[in-house]
Amino acid sequence: MSNAGQSWPPVETEPAVPHPKAPQPGSKLGVHYSHCFGCGDEVEVGLHLQSSVTDGPEVVSEFAVTEAHQGAPGLAHGGLLACAFDEALGAAVGNLLRKPAVTAKLETDFVRPVPVGSTLFITARLDGVAGRKTYASADGRLDAGDGPVAVRARGLFVTVGVEHFTTHGDKDALEKLAASARRRREEWDINP
Ligand SMILES: CCCCC/C=C\C/C=C\C/C=C\C/C=C\CCCC(=O)SCCNC(=O)CCNC(=O)[C@H](O)C(C)(C)COP(=O)(O)OP(=O)(O)OC[C@H]1O[C@@H](n2cnc3c(N)ncnc32)[C@H](O)[C@@H]1OP(=O)(O)O
Image (cartoon, rainbow, N blue to C red; front, side, top):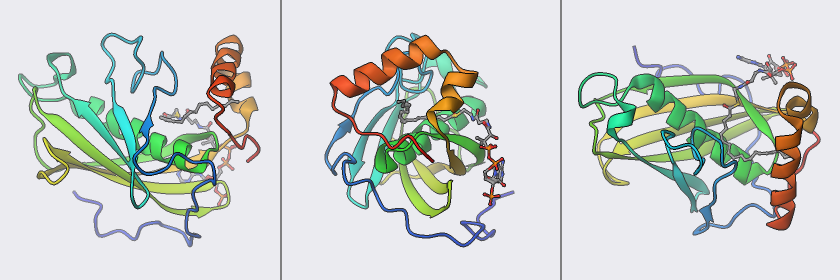
């Protein structure tokens, strides 16, 4: 059943204001972590999403669906499509707000099948902020930015401090990631 009728965002929010150092419309977003299943260039069977910022601001991510992503013969697996939307929404939240945030809730509506060989154009936007909570939504269109909608998703991202990653994740890998962000002169607000 579609969730389109439910009010969104589900709580009162403020407009999401992009960080002054957020990438400008027209910017291509690089890989945020080379071992990320969603965008990493060192994950052979990953989704290899490529994202850029457009007016709005929105983040458009392209996902080329291959045989590695099948559920039924010739069709993308729904769980992998949800993963692509997690990445696309996360890229919008992380890059536009420049604050580390994690997915707390992710809802997907699968509207039409996504064939192997197609490219999904996923447009993600920020719908509002309430304290540490950011609400975002996205549409995935088949083979063109104005193609038919195949998948819709929306999610809640919660801003976390760097200790979320140092406590629960791989601290050494995080330090390397932070060093490479500093080399690229990226600015992050790391206090929620
Ligand atoms: C210098 C270092 C920089 C590091 C940055 C590096 C890289 C980032 C780079 C680039 C970004 C670009 C792209 C990103 C791309 C993809 C992103 C993928 C993201 C993921 O794939 S990430 C993995 C999956 N994700 C998790 O692994 C989260 C596990 N989880 C938790 O870690 C906790 O659960 C947490 C932290 C979510 C909350 O925990 P917590 O203790 O901090 O806070 P709390 O529980 O109080 O929640 C606060 C408010 O959210 C509400 N709330 C929470 N959960 C809710 C739910 N499910 N439904 C409705 N409301 C919910 C509460 O009700 C409360 O609301 P209220 O404030 O109104 O009371």
